[in-house]
Length: 336
Image (cartoon, rainbow, N blue to C red; front, side, top):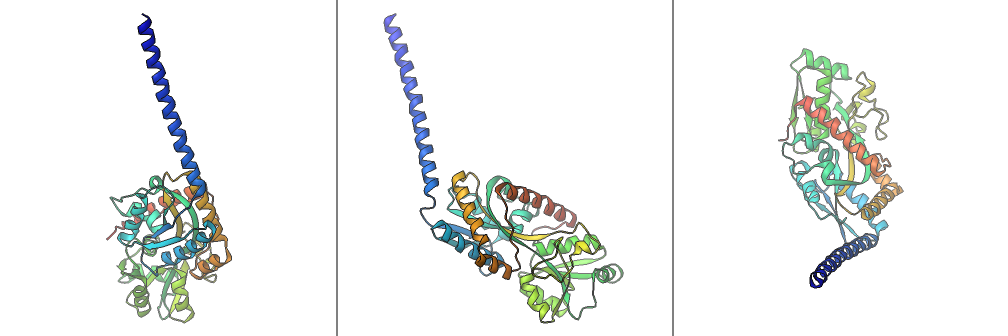
């Protein structure tokens, strides 16, 4: 009997030691995790741009990352990983280690439109990413050639409904400019044919040359042509006026009050990145966007900044997913 009691106590003691060992191990791991987060970053951080070099997203990423580097005291290297409408680069970050050392400059396309545009998107915006910093937004301008007969939205509507129809250009299927045109098509009615281009520069050239009747494109690329007398703006895609084109009236104020689409840029990290690391990165991103130098560079791209908390970024992203999903559904747009 005594031997049995001794054996039972020994087993219980061993079990307690085992549980205690596990607890100590977990606490040690937690301590190391907290310590690592407090020391973050100790090496180079990578920011992936899911589009090519020289694009607006690339320019925004390089301006923002340079300022973030100074605030973090560590280099941030920008890596362009283009392809698949931003899917390739974004997917790579979604699958990256959640340690704060791999970020992505997300856009309205990659983190707002793509989930509705692609049937088998390899990432889930709300489940695979945590927002780090909202950089800014820019509307698109509705533009026609200066010698075009279309002076306003009523002229476009008349041409679409009474004549052979209109053709509109875009920098590619599924872009914000394409979907803004598709939304306009549903509002005005009539016949409108989409002519997608591989890049926006050639699309602008063909609009100026009359090969396509209109397009939506960002102010930074459009305003020099407007000032030179080659293009005319008929409206802005945002609900309010654009700081880059204050003289252009929003489409929402021309009889279509629910017309409100903008391009935007937001830094993301993989989900499950430690909260302390997220907080450190968010402080650096907010500080970077708030600097006069970055704000000036963004303004040069027609981008307006806006401060957002973590919860506000999540709510904003959820709203954008819903908004763009409705536009994609109504337009029937599909990724090429």
